[in-house]
Image (tube, rainbow over all chains, first blue to last red; front, side, top):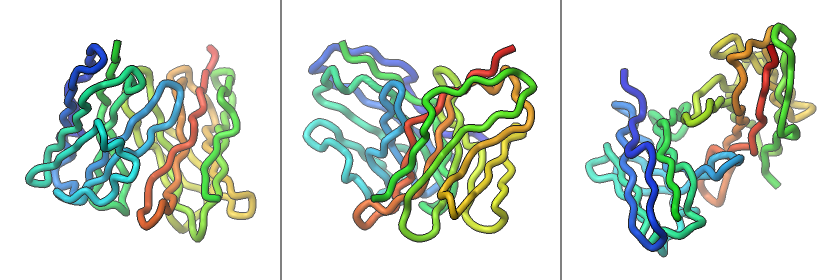
Length: 113
Length: 115
């Protein structure tokens, strides 16, 4: 069975440009997460979806970050405009429900120059 | 305050020796505890978890972890380390943030197994 799939794996953009990341969760997983991981640190939750509803987005910087999960399957995370401090790994993860083990994708590595 | 901590940034061990990566936590109520491993340029891989039951939890790749309620610890262990175990290890705990439960990660411990 395929795991969590993310794209692109690597992205380098200039500051003030937009960027988008895509995630396809494990089939049947209703809960989808976006985490951000800065170098040398643990991941931090940005947003959690239950099906197509964002149920926890308290740590998403809403002035420049947005996310959507249309039809409750794939999800997109967007940053517009990007800032130098946004350079990080953006990890998508999924689980059957919020109570179950979370499985991560390989991550999208963003460098803002 | 609720938290999870990994007191060691770096652990070095010789191949064939036992290894321990430490984790302590502070939560309200019963803890849900996890260990993940991250290899260079990769995502996080699930190793094991403790929800309830036996205090000694066995996981992937020969790893195990011991839940100790009195010491509020959940240390990761392996009887005989391999060079291929060298990676970044994260302890995580489900914490109540406002009205939502979130899986919250420690800062990570870099394990290096020396040949």
